[in-house]
Image (cartoon, rainbow, N blue to C red; front, side):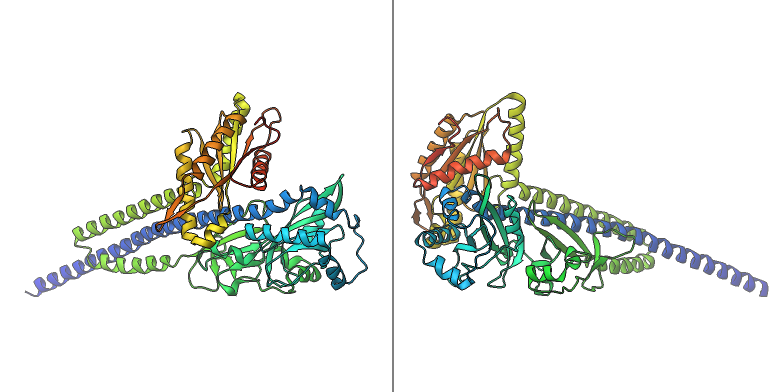
Length: 536
């Protein structure tokens, strides 16, 4: 009897040991498996947020580029105006500073009828294009005429010869610079175009847009913009403003140069560093948070600003917490294989769902990157790609093609009188009219605001002008309707044909088309003008 009891105790002991070992092995296996699954989910989250961050930065940069291209184009066009050159020729054509004080120069030039008329003209252009200021400086860097908001201080007579945009213009180059305004202490972007007479520099035209005017391009606090020196110049989070990126150029500039540009000598460095020493460079620590962030940046093409996007990865913490809970539950329910299988099936369904969402999101972002959200036609970036493709085809096959530059006349008045929703309805109605008029091979693109371009493959200037006139007439007789209101509007159109013999670039081609558009507007609007070098 005693031996049986001992034998029974031995059997129970071994069963307990085996059961314990199996439980331990199952818990370890469950923990390891849960870790692998968690890492897969984390990788998916990181990849998803990385793609979103990159796409967001690129989209915002593209939108900002469209706006800044418009600001930059104004000095380029005005520098060709003979009246500007004639006015600047009155001043000294060297860089000798005037012996007069600033207030003396201002009083003298404000009383000058020709300069006063030019100031009035600059103010009209500034108001129409929605610039903050548009001004002209002579060869010495003195502002001689300026269009500005009424509440802005008069800065005629102020010298800007130390600004980088003026120094670039002095060397015969187009200038651009971020700087804090000399008279109002407001951060802004400046663009300059030299005015030359017989190859001699006699002054420059400068346009300015306040950085705050780009705020609508920044949807949340995780996005900010830096200038070429790595200084945060625009952000919804005010704590980020005027801070510098780690190891940025601003930290290496002489204090006196920094003071001239920013009216500030020292800059606090942003708390931005890699999350792990040997980890991915775009997974970072941000603002001393307890979880990582994904980081992406995209430089605005040909502009002194860069868009930065920071997105939190707090979802990783949720995944890690879920891992612990999942491991405990699965370990406790190890003998219930059905529940385990059901859990795995549900888990892989969740992964499949996340992947499907990611694919849909990528498709949506790709569509947004090539389509204008409001009107549904091609956006500026997509149109430029189509135009370059057509140019290459023209080179290979010697096919002619033309382009139309369209601008809705007095569109600002429509927005001011009927409201911006009505203005949006006019834009959509305008696009619908054009799409009914065009051929299947023609391509319409929105360049920004009320400006559109149309690519006409295998079309010479004469036929393009006929198409343009048909569009103009159709627009004139087809008013838009908004809230039972009839909105009449017209369009001005410039026509240009690509010059195969000159192997013309896209930029030159667009410039000629825009020049024809400006001629149409200057001649009274609601008309078609063909570039002077093409056969009308």
